[in-house]
Every structure is written in C-alpha cells, then in structure tokens.
Length: 133
Image: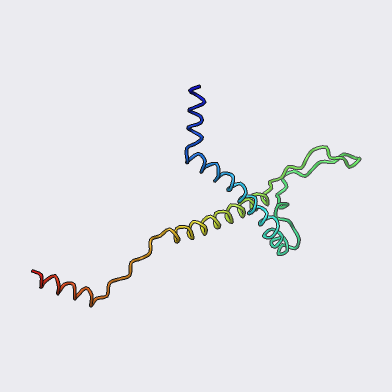
C-alpha cells in the first residue's frame, strides 16, 4: 500500500500536473505550427521556387536502379535536405511564437513602474528635512 500512496502523492503535486498540461498544450501548439508551415509558408516558398516543394529537395548520390521491366531493383540514395529545411522553419516559427508569448506574459507580470518624483518635490523634501533638524 505504501507504493500506491507514494505514487498518489507524486501525481497530486502541482509541478507534475503543470508539466502534464504543458506537454499536452505543447503538442497541440506544435501541430498548429506544423499546419501553418505545411499549409501556408511552404506553399508560398513553393510558389517562389516555381512549384517545387521544399520537402522534395534532395541531392541524389545514387539514382534508383531499374530492371528491364521498369521495376525498381535498388532504391535511390539521396540526401533529403528539403525536409531538414522545413523542420528548421518549423522550429524557428515555434521559437518566435514562444518568444512573443513570453514577452507579452512578462510585460503583464511586470510591476507598474513608479513615476519619477519631480525635482521640485525632491527639493521641498530636502528643505523640510533640513528644517526638522
């Protein structure tokens, strides 16, 4: 029974629940950014590159080998750098959005700046303090 109660205590801690929520929201957020990249950014890049999909960009080291019937005997050996570029774009967009969200969050959390005391008020305070002495 001790292990079950320890597990219950572990699960009920706030940090574990917060982490679980963050993982779920992060997964959903990642899907949103991937949809943005796949549905909007990459087609725009494809339009600039005359219809070529970025994920199809590759450097062929060894072309596929076909037999006399046209059947593929050996698969193509290629470095698929287009997929890597798309993943980098995904990462950069996710990092940018997280940066903007955290910047807005920190701005909301920052305490309101106290207004600067005018110089004449400071001078009057000095005079008051010197008169008290």
